[in-house]
Length: 160
Image 1 (tube, rainbow, N blue to C red):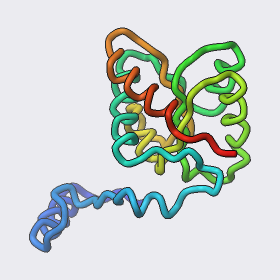
Image 2: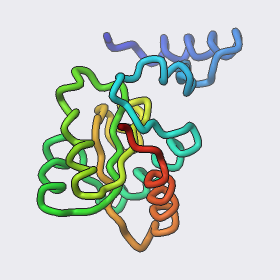
Image 3: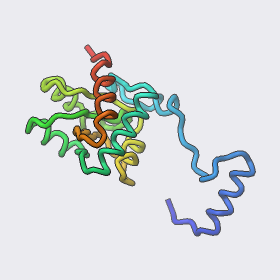
């Protein structure tokens, strides 16, 4: 958590590439490693392929300011009747923070899906901060990606 001087970081990166590590020195967790840390309520969980599509859709929407980020903001706009795809992070603790959102989405017929990592969700939205909930709003600039994600998330089996 402490700051590292650039020279040290460059040496560590060089050492990591020599020993077979990645060029950035940071190893990304695989999808299976991320799934090991999800909550018991994270259902329906997006597949690896759908997760990537959702991350790309979030990235496109965030460039056009077409996302709602955070529990408070998403909840407010769901209550106001705004529509979109709700993406929830499956590794958020405590569960009580956002366990009411899937019920709200089902009541208003909004598609929702869980993805394994809140860190990846936050970074795809252009933030350094992890985010546990994002709502993607429709826009004509990324209509194809949005519709594809909407159809796939709607087709996911809902929990009992």
